[in-house]
Image (cartoon, rainbow, N blue to C red; front, side, top):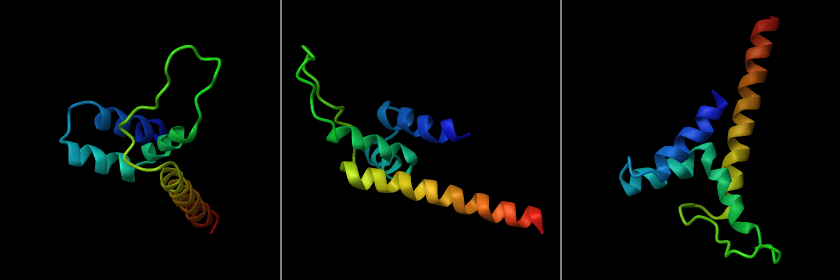
Amino acid sequence: MAIVAVVLPCILGTAATLPVCAAEWLLRVTPAAAFAIQQSIPACPRVSADYTPPAHFPLDPWPGFAVLCGYAAKGQALAMVLLRRRDE
């Protein structure tokens, strides 16, 4: 389920299946926003081909990472709630 939550928005956002505004919104609010951190990786001088990150990241690197952290915190909070309910 977690893989679907990360991979499916990337596929839908980068493929031409959704309108541009919907695709950008989807890539901003789903865990796929964490891929924006790849924009901060410098090019390696040993790579002979030109390296440029994909231009489809709608967020800057740190806000994208913050979205991922938010989803991780929500998942952990949900797990804690379910664990406490089960143990009562």
